[in-house]
Length: 144
Image: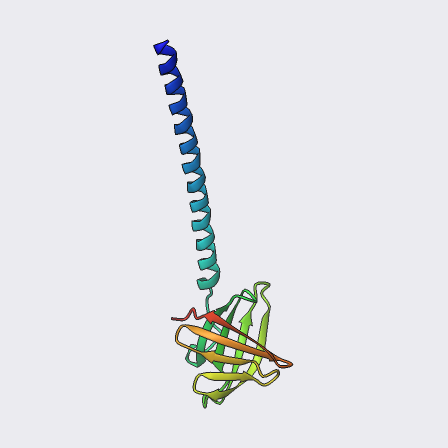
C-alpha cells in the first residue's frame, strides 16, 4: 500500500513539474516574441539613414511618424531659413513633400493646408485642422 501511495505522489509531483515547465516555456516564448518585436520596431524607427542628397546643415528635425509609418524630415529650403519643407519617406519607398513657412523659431505651417509642425527637443508635434476639427499627434524625434 505504501508503495502505491509513493508512486502516486511521485506521479503527481511529475505532473506538477511538467505543468510548471510548460508554463515557464510559454512565458519564455512570449518574452522572446516581445523582445523580437521590440527589436524590429527599433530597427524600423531608428534604422532610417538620411539620404546623401540632403544637406545635413539645413535639417531642423528628423522624426518617425507613427500614422504613416514613415520618416519625416523638416529642413530649410534656403540659407536664409525663411522657408522649409517636410519630406516624408513612406514604407512603399515613395516620398511626400510639403512646403512650409516658418511661423516662429520652432513652428512651421504647410502652405497647402495649414498643418502645423512644432519642433520640440524630443518630439515633432503635428497639428492637423480640418473643417474645425483638430488632430494632434507627437512624433518621436530620431535625430537626438
